[in-house]
Amino acid sequence: MGIIPRSRKYELKHKGPYVLAANHSSDIDIPLTFLASPSPVVFMGKAELLKLPLFGYFFKQTSIAVDRSSFRGRKQALLEADQRIKDGFSVCIYPEGGIPPQKHLVGPFRAGAFKLAVDNHVPIVLMSIYQSKFRLGDWGEPSSLGPVDTAVIGEFWPNLKAKNPIQDLSDRCYLALAKDLKSWGHEGKVALPLNE
Image (cartoon, rainbow, N blue to C red; front, side, top):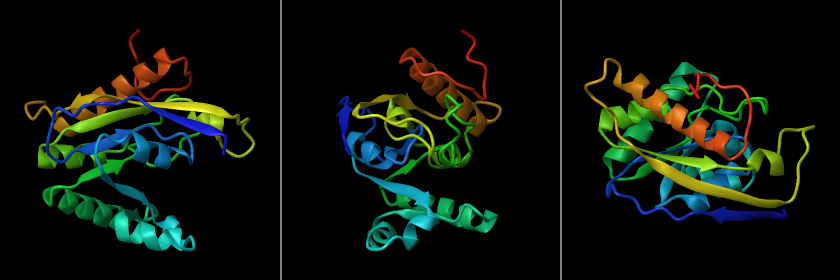
């Protein structure tokens, strides 16, 4: 496709399961995340992927499908992800819940990834994916050939003493990701003030 993945290596400090969270700005983010992940992860993805010929079969065997149109479907997917973590597997969730409009630097986060981390007392391993929306953007947006860099920017542990540990973890990860993307020259709307 003319896209050159460039993953910065990261040595995990935590040796158990974790929740991998990354920004989501293009359809190429899934293979890029797969290549850059510090260890194998189970992906959580939209249930519509099950309808794809052949890919849908493999997706069903290896990933967690989320029916984003219903509360019950989202809850069931989180219960399955919770069980995978308890079984010792790491789980990848894009906390924006889908690809936000390109005018966003980072879309608002949903709580699922952070609830999983708090409930299981595991870290969020936070990854930045740079340039992907410029390489393969939304329909009608300009696209280009070239490299896409990825980097794990840290391990974020829940603060169980916080007034709302889920929101606290979400906000810390959101700000770290948004500031990191901004330092790479990305621009756009944010859901939280960056205080810079």
